[in-house]
Length: 202
Ligand code: GRF
Image (cartoon, rainbow, N blue to C red; front, side):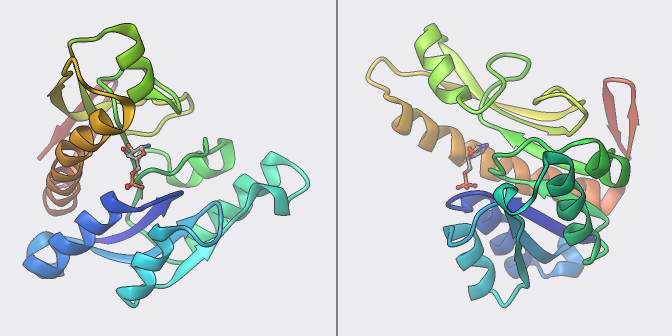
């Protein structure tokens, strides 16, 4: 299976996928990353792809007159690599109707909280501020909401009294990277069905 991965920052989730594919071999893992895209230039996630010899692209919102034009351009850039699956791993933009028309139902996102709790761009900070005793991460299919699509898998992380946002996020990312690698490999190898809110992996 062909994966296009979308990043906005450090790309450690992308790196976990690249490492799993390198260790297992694309055949055994069931997928290969054919391109990495970002909404901004110069992020570490793009450098990780370049180091792995993987094509990259940047589609910046500010280069387009409207959000819809950006959304279409992003969809075109992704489509150019003919992915079977798109993985949003720390991609900090909400994709729109055009993108979902073409890649809905086969775009996976990872979020650093136990959805439906704490959706949005500050899930770790919000869980901490709320005083949650456990939080975690969620791998889900992207739908037309914000972090609202059908859930594939979740991982739980204890919140510690001494935690600040970055310490907690780092512990969440340890679980998240393992969860994402496991889920992407399974759905790539076995196929899946989405039945309403349920995801069934064959
Ligand atoms: C991940 O925790 C992701 O869930 C969140 O931002 C983080 C991205 O980390 N949206 P990285 O860029 O994969 O290191």
